[in-house]
Image 1 (cartoon, rainbow, N blue to C red):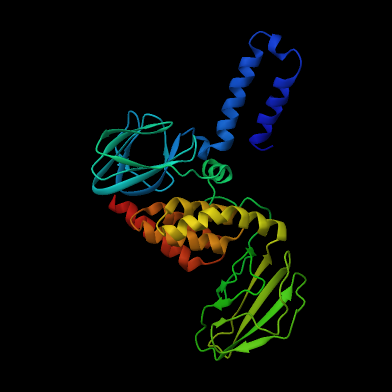
Image 2 (image 1 turned 90 degrees about the vertical axis):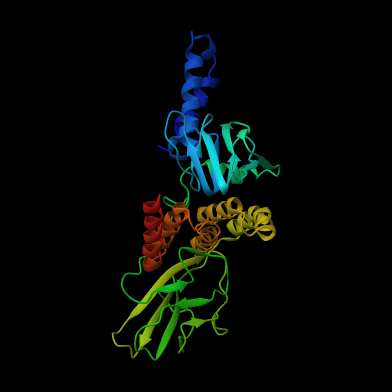
Amino acid sequence: MSCVQPFLLLARRLAEPGTSRRGGTRAGLLACAAALWLVAYSPAGAAGVAQVMNARGAQVKPAGKALKPASLMMMLDAGDQVQTAKTASLTVVFYQDGHREELLPDSVARITPSGLQVLKGKKSVVPRRIGSKALQRLVGGKLLTSSPGRPGAVAQRGEGICIRAPLPPAIRSHKPSLVWDAVEGAESYTLTLCDKDDKALADSVTVAATRLAYPAAWPELSPGDECTLNITAERAVEPLSGSVSFRVLAESDAQAVAAEEGALGESVKRNPKDVMSRLLLAQLYEQYRLLGEAIGQVEAIVRCIPDDPSPYHILARLCDKVGLADRARQAEEQAGKLERRK
């Protein structure tokens, strides 16, 4: 049973005739329901009021605790204190309505449910609010750090040629570009596209490069198609091959993604360093198992805030899910280096 189901059962219980007459029963059930709701829809079960979206040299002091560095996706509770150095800044998104506030350099503020209460220095407010679906994803738990929200496992490729595109488990392109790592001594590579039953969809193609536009002789893929790409290195020092299984996003899912990514994409175009919009895009793509696109957004976040270890951890977990073991290892090592500096 999911953590949401007990909440729904309690809601039905509250609706039963006579519940309000049972001496405090209704109040008790309401308290339980509220607690379950917080567990279901708050990250790691915490009941914060805000979240860090961008932090450069900023620090957080939870009530009754010592100062610690602020990091991407850090939960903030009412009463927490935040502060920035002379060359630092901190952006916070508030769950109450999804608006953002930035604490400017050399400032101190207290977190309230509705915004930053400035104690020293200045803040700026971004009145534009994020949509309810995007806000729900933001508050909805450890997306990007746990199993994707839709069924189906990522294909395990094992030892062999590392295929970097298309990435599993889902793509949107009906003619995806094909990219893979070079193999020592290989003179060429043979590529075969198969259906889910491992039946070839077209004649194999042999090329000398490690990058190929989708061959014109191959059939255009359709929404919902499940395919496997097989690559074999010809005349390599060691015989090597690789394969990756993926599916083309169903039409209904593609429409759902397009409908929600529009405003976020426009925000990123206006401000490429808009970390919150990029994070929400990454969460959207992860929700629909477009992990390659999610990785692209997290890599952009890393470039925006290179001194924050949190996005490196996220990047490492996503890369591991799609079989990019070397990239995952590099990201985890970089996160470790940054954490040791602090």
